[in-house]
Length: 110
Image (cartoon, rainbow, N blue to C red; front, side, top):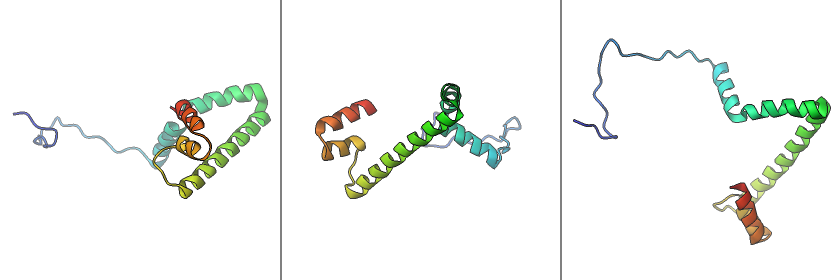
């Protein structure tokens, strides 16, 4: 008899059933999360940036880029608080600037 996706299959208590051992510690989970969130591209691109711009230039570039992203996200948060709508930043660009800008932002973001 076949089981539906919602039904639970009967449990088998066979001695060959294998169990997983919980051996991951907090630091392992943290490193997995950081690796998944940041990705390897940041580490590879950092090496190329340091090679071309030097340590000071790369640090300055990362600080300037981080400041731009911070101000962008702060303004997006302010707009989301002022006018809560379903949509992304292209919706706000259509509303506050021009529908053509909203379309182009949505097209480039996709």
